[in-house]
Length: 228
Image (cartoon, rainbow, N blue to C red; front, side):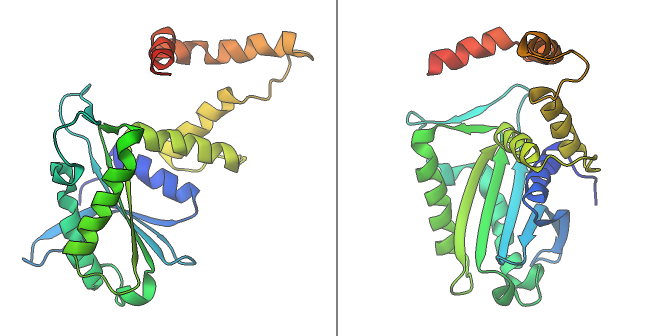
């Protein structure tokens, strides 16, 4: 089994911060007898909520796909969704010996380099839910949900979740610890500069300056301003 990729660890990080049990690269045997794996499994035993997550980032390093009102295809036709065929094994006790007793809610999550505009997100996720319900023999009573994210969507939520936790020591997870360091400078408690915003604000700005420059802050701000 190969090591976890960065995108898979980003997915796992969010579910860990939400206090789910997680497993990256969960191995299973297909109906044909071959071995495959699920990128990320996350499970909340109290809610009986199972998340089956797939990371699919394809194409050139700067390629981003779009799903907008002008896109000439239905999201369910996306080649990214082949991982849903794994549900046959998962529901067939590939994860739990008695799946129906352990799962009341099933979320299928695709994290890719596709940006979905808000006007099409609900439609795209509803289409995935319908596809799962119509094509896979789920136990009665299991509620299906879909999450369609970009990797940056998930990473942003990891930063927000970690900020709320405010853990006083490192987590021992590379993605969460990066989020922890970002939050250190995004919301710092400045020491040694004296009192008052006139003394602390320059320190806060300097702490963020190189990071903002690295992501080409002025250009990004202009683009987002134009979109608003």
